[in-house]
Amino acid sequence: MVGIHTAVRARRRPASVLAGLCAATALLALAGCGGGTSTANGSYGFPQVKQESSAITVWVDADRQAAAKAFQKANPDTKINVVAYDGSANGSNSFRTKMQLFDRAGSGWPDVVFSTQNNDAAWASQKSNGKQAFAAVLDKGLVPGDTLAKFTPGSLNPCKVDGQLYCLRNDLAQTVLWYNKKLMDQFGYALPTTWEDYQALGEKVAKQHPGYIIGAAGDGFAPEIYMWAGKCQANGVTGPKSVTVKVDTPECKRVASMLDTLRGNGTVPVVSVFTPEFVKKYTGKVLMMPGPAWYAGAIFNNPQSLNVPAGQLGVAAPLPWKGDDKAVTGNVGGGTWFVSSHSKNLAAAEKFVQFVTTADDYQVNVAPGYPAYAPAADKWIAKQESSKYFATSLQPVVTAASDVWDGWGYGVFSQEAIWAKTMTTGVTGGKSLVALLPDWQQAIENQAKVNGYSVN
Image (cartoon, rainbow, N blue to C red; front, top):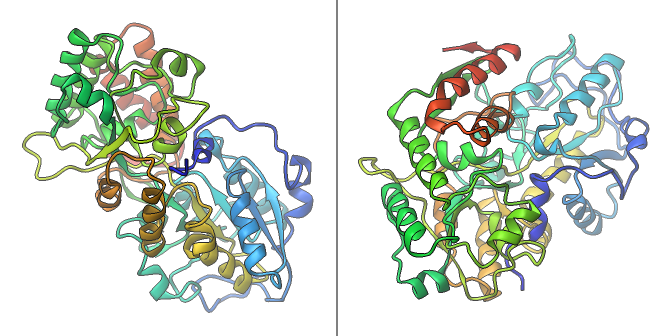
């Protein structure tokens, strides 16, 4: 089965010992493509070092090694050194930590870096230890404007700081409603059209088909799936160092109350979808699952997970809350590509990031996730549908790509880590999400302040 490739699950799973193109100990040795003294004024909106036709160094995670290989095959005359690292997976912050080391050393920066996180532009666009910002400005001539214009509307928002663009999105992770059409038809259940209907269905399932589930909330990205889609203003980043945190609102409470109800009756368990426990207990028992586009391959069309047979998996549009004008979605990942402002070969670095984000050779033929570049996304969807794996059209995935709620920002701190430490731990300790909302508020404020944010 073709389906949506299983490799995207690595974005959320613990990084293994680095092996592949380079050993971890080679990171410093291979990274030295930047350095030297920058010119006072660069032609692309940032200081530049003297340019030369040198090989570029590219940092990728395990899944994006395929992107580097595709580029090398299509561009044999452009020399690249490829370094494998964890991609800052699970909020490891390795990207930022290593760049800070190079800032202090005054050399060693790679030319291109892939990150699994969407909040890296918040720090990579700022000066560090007196050094210029790591990330090159991309929308002042370095990347052609007509290329940028073809990215899905809103997809580049995580890359923008103070109106300037500092990275390109690799793929998108908009949330939709996945469901097992065969089981839903067999049990005679209609698809919910609102979150209220979703809760009501969960209460019915608990009574009529105990043991079956309609979602899961045991991973750190639960707030991105449920709270973000509920317009809970827990992460209202309004500037490089300003955030609004307000979780005592009706929007937040309605989501927490719903999850408490469904957690209590067992239809939305607090279990990670990436655990053996989940696979053992819920294979063949998942009626529905709100989640990102990459869930299709990471969970459903994956022999190592639920392994749902072809012709059963359907997808529906994101759910609205009654009274809302329209449904909005959360965003659960989607990688980003950065060009270093220290690069001695910006032309080659730009050529690489443009290829891996837009070229069919990678984004359509190889890439595991839904491309951020709209022309590639259209072809990618057509390829997935041609596999005949899905029971329905994938159009809801396409539509949801532009429906990510803009009230949830991309700050330096990780909301996933805060949720896991505060809310998941509290729930497993016997507390309700509603009761834990004040704790969540305080935890977000504390983490934001540690990172230098003013909290509104």
